[in-house]
Amino acid sequence: MADSWVIMVTAQTPTNIAVIKYWGKRDEKLILPVNDSISVTLDPAHLCTTTTVAVSPSFAQDRMWLNGKEISLSGGRYQNCLREIRARACDVEDKERGIKISKKDWEKLHVHIASYNNFPTAAGLASSAAGFACLVFALAKLMNAKEDNSELSAIARQGSGSACRSLFGGFVKWKMGKVEDGSDSLAVQVVDEKHWDDLVIIIAVVSSRQKETSSTTGMRETVETSLLLQHRAKEIVPKRIVQMEESIKNRNFASFAHLTCADSNQFHAVCMDTCPPIFYMNDTSHRIISCVEKWNRSVGTPQVAYTFDAGPNAVLIAHNRKAAAQLLQKLLFYFPPNSDTELNSYVLGDKSILKDAG
Ligand code: DP6
Image 1 (cartoon, protein in one colour):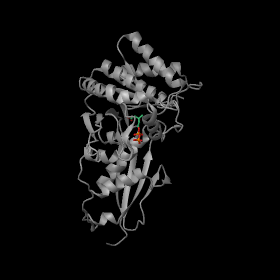
Image 2 (tube, protein in one colour):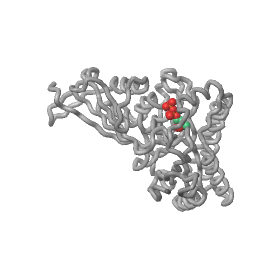
Image 3 (cartoon, rainbow, N blue to C red):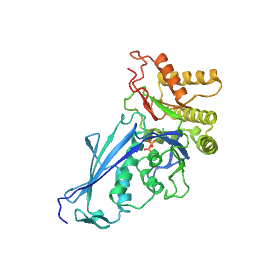
Image 4 (cartoon, protein in one colour):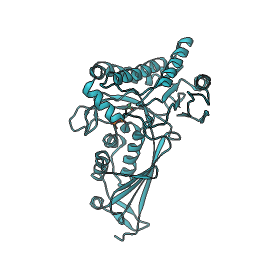
């Protein structure tokens, strides 16, 4: 093989937001969770990662750049994903350019990876979810791996747990699985993105600063110290998963909103039950919850659901565009631009109504 050629593949993967949360691992190395989780995948036009992977005989080692800055690939999570995809690589041929890569060649060839997020990294906006899903998908395409998206999700999972759910659009369930090697801990689509397309997702960015306790560290401490987590994983989540799937399939917003808010609140309660306690939400997050709860109660039927991941930013899911427009009005009224509690920006999972509140 002459060593002047490069083959590249680019992929784009949206992030996902859990409505029944994953929090806690039963196996840290394989990233196996203590409970099933369900998420909604956002519109790729908004929060997404774009990753280009390239292979060339002239590359001396695997290298990666994240948002333009080189990062180390020595961490186990990247190595796991690279190893698992390499093990599934197949022959690749570019007839036009006379390039042939055999299954065996992939063991010697190195890759370069360039990845960009169009949203703040590690600010509780699930950047690792989109990142690892995109990396695994792009590598699989480059190396001509034949696995389907569920099988790829079990590899993305080994990069970051929540990443396995970003291999599908719509609503997605991550089945915790039973077997020790983790091969049945993977994502399946509950419904596709067209099933419930009048929902509008708004992210109120309370702060885009890096979070103090990473999800990985936070959930490790929770597993070690919280009794509430054990009750949640064994008694509460299995029932909620069944109810949530039903609500989604029937497009029952009242039940969906109730379960989403309750699960977010229980996840943050479990964080508080950790020793030492972990606080991801701040005063502004709490005020957003009160505002939504008050509004939902005043109209009788829920118009908006809220959920918060490992950070203070609110993910608000409105029943339809009318509810979304009303919600934005309320947010602008209660958290006005140029005030202490200004929300930096709103991003819509559906279509952009308003990008910068300031
Ligand atoms: C609160 O997937 O980021 O967003 O598996 O350690 O990489 P690791 O954690 P990560 O945790 C996400 C936690 C969450 C809830 C969720 O997305 O289900």
